[in-house]
Image (cartoon, rainbow, N blue to C red; front, side, top):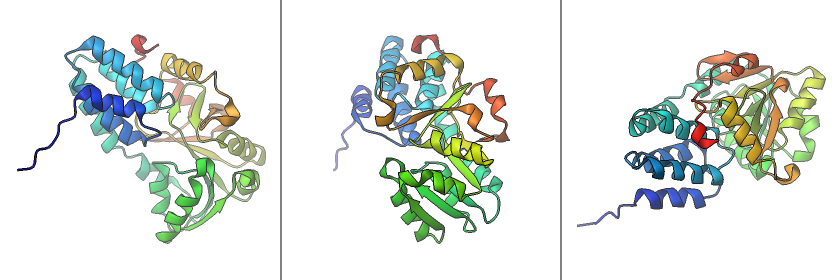
Length: 267
C-alpha cells in the first residue's frame, strides 16, 4: 500500500512564498488550496496572505484572491469561487475572436493567456520580443503548431513595432491609471502610439484591482531599479483597447468597478 504524504497548509504556503516566478493560474490555484485550509484561523489567514504578497508583489490575481477571501463571509467558499473563475476564464477565446485577420502582431515574452489565443490563429504573423528570455521559446513553440513566428531581440522592439499592425500586451495587474507587464512594454506601447498603431491589453480574470490595492502594489515596487526589474509599470493611457472576460472594453471603463474589494487589511 502506497502512503501519500499530506502537505500541511502552512508548508504549502511557505513553499509558494519561496518559489520563483509562477504562472498566475498556478499561483492562484495553489494559494487558494493553502489559504482555504486556514478559513477557521482569521489571523493566520491574514498573515499568510501578507507573506505571499511580499514574495509575489506583481501578481494581481493573488491580491484578488486574498482580498476576496478576507472580505467574504466564507473564505473557503470564496477561494473555490476564485478557482472556478480562473479555470473558466473566457479571455483567451475573446482575444482569439477579436484579432484581425492576417495581421502582423507584436508580443513580448510569453504572455500566459494571450499565447494560447495566438497559437490558435494560423493566419497571423507574430513578432515575439525576447523579453525575460522567454520570447525565443514561445516563437519556437508557435512555429511547431504551424504559426508564423519570428523571435526579436529586445533591442529590436522599436523596429518590430513599426513593422507590425498591432501590439498585444498582457497585464499581471491593472489599476485605474496603469498596469504591470513584461519589461519593454512601455517602449513598445509608446512607439506604437507615435506610429498610430493600436495597442491591446489582455486583462484576464482577477487582474483589475481597486485603487487602494493598486496603489499598494505600485508603492511596493518603488524601491526597485526599474531598468533591472523583471516587470514594468505602464500608463494605461497608452492602451487603445482592453480584452477582458466580458469582451473588448475601453480603458476608461477600468476606472469603474474592480474585480475585488479594496481590502483594508492588505494596505
